[in-house]
Image (cartoon, rainbow, N blue to C red; front, side, top):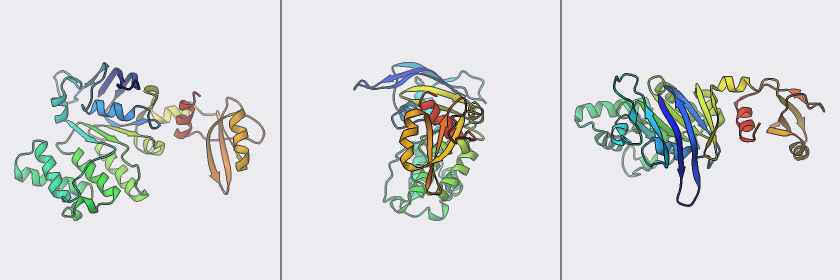
Length: 295
């Protein structure tokens, strides 16, 4: 389990990226949702030992270890031994093959035996469906292939803590499904933190989640339980596109969706708004927007 306690960070320009953030993240997939600028990447970089904070602490309890929990902020070298990290933007050497660069990363990770390293590299390339293109230069890879290469390097050394920042942004549907399946496999044996602004990714993958906005944790828990809280409070009506602004002024509109050329408006209300609104089944997107808008 990863324990984050009262974490705060203010940058030199005065932007307070994290404001007293506290979370407990168990083994499995944990979704961190929030809009751009919410503080997600700052939190991820801090957990990944890439930057410090002004206040707070982070501890990683290793399930198989009888020793004390790792102090993430003060035992960076030890944490990096059990950490896998896939940043939102990963630099590559476009003229190098996938196999050669992954082998290089394996050396940096401490795999000095050539035989063992060859076996590990081949295994990870197969796991990420890149083995058949292992000799190709990375500069010829599609966005999805590069993301899969990124997760391959993040899995070197069998990490116990894995951080993936916006992993499916820009992927086509097939690549996204393949990536989801891979992340689910990884989450069976490690703490995996998925930072994203794509609500659907969290709904499909994560057993627990948190919503972050303007550096603060606004909500956390199990997605299903959070959705259940909105039962009986979401209402839908199909309206003309020109009518949407009127409803936004008078009601708490959560989402607007196109339906057969018209627009379905979903609003949050403890009782029926009347005027043709029908009950709607709440989902995680409703939870997300209700939370961000103070519902």
